[in-house]
Amino acid sequence: MSDAETVDSRNGIQVIARAASVLRALKDAQEGMSLGQIAERVSLPRSTVQRIVGALQVERLVITSASGSGIKLGPEIHALAEAARYNVAEALRPMLQQLSDETGETVDLAVLRRGSMVFIDQIPGTQRLRTVSSVGEAFPLTTTANGKACLALMTNDQVERLARAEWEEKKDMPAFLQEIDRIRATGVALDQDEHTTGISAVGIGFPDWKGDLYAISVPAPSSRFAENRERYIAAISKLRPAIEPLLGK
Image (cartoon, rainbow, N blue to C red; front, side, top):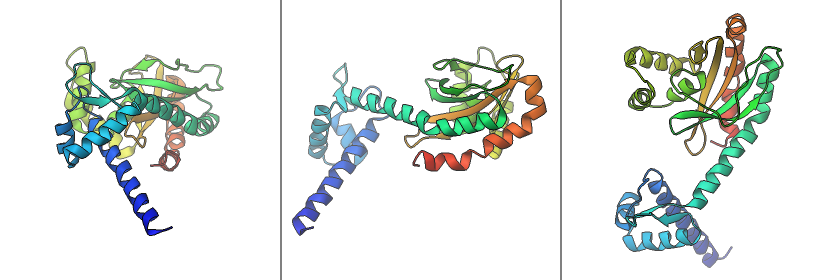
C-alpha cells in the first residue's frame, strides 16, 4: 500500500469513528440535538459535525426532528436495530433448543422494550403440561424471572424508577432491591407464582453489543418447578459463558 493509500485509509477510519460518535450522542436525545450541542458532546468543531450530519442525512441515518429543534436518529437506524434484534434471536436459537431439550420445558427469549419484557422467540417444551406464551406478548418486569434478570443489570436508581412506574400500589422497595442484589450475586432470577399462580420460572439476563437487555427464561408448572428447580438453574446457568462470544461482545 502506498503512503497516499495509507493516509486515505486512516482518514476513512477517522470519518467512520466520528460519524459513530455523532450517532451515539443522539442515541438518548429523543427530542433531538442542535449541531452545537452535538459538537460539544463529541468534542469536534461545529463545521466538522455539520459535514458529518449532512452525510448521515443523505443515508437517512439521522433526520431533522419534527419540531425543527434539532437532529435525531433517523428511520434507517431503527430498521438496522430491528434487523439486529432478529439476528440475536437467530443466533441464540440453537442455545434455546439445547436448553429445552435438556429440561424438557418451554424456553423463552425476551427483550426489554418500553418498560416491559417482549417475547421474541420461544421453543415449546415436550411435557404434556407446559407453559406457552405468544411471541410479541409483553410481560411486566417486577414479577417475572426474565424481567427481574434484566433489572439486575441496572443501577438501583433505574430499578426503583421502573418498579414504581409498574406498581399500582405501594410495595416494599428495600426488600425488592435486596432481591435484585441477590440476583446480581447469583446471576439467576426466580418467579415463584408471582406473575401467574401455578407457574414459576428461572431466568438469566444479558446485554447485546448495543446495550439492549435480553433474558432467557424457563417457565414450568409450579409443582414440577419445585421438584426440578436446581436442575433448571444449573442448566440455564451453563448458557452464560457461551452467550457473550456468540453475540460478539
